[in-house]
Image 1 (tube, rainbow, N blue to C red):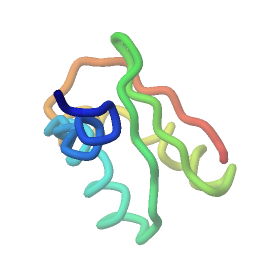
Image 2: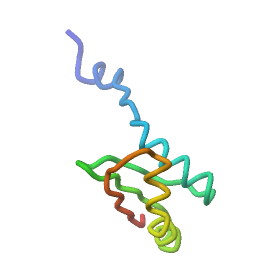
Image 3: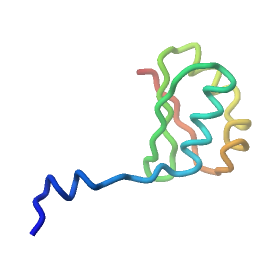
Image 4: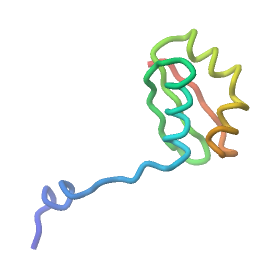
Length: 78
């Protein structure tokens, strides 16, 4: 029987396509790293500065189109 550590060591969660697309859009357009997570029917985007979060908020429709998603985007500073 495998231990819990062995099972979790093999675990490799797949990153959804829309998460990767949002990260790619932010990096290509602004050259900034970001963290994107799925929480229910929302994509939570965490960036380092308030000015970047505000700029992303203004481009929300373009980000959704680039990611091919209809999920709500939530921007956080962290």
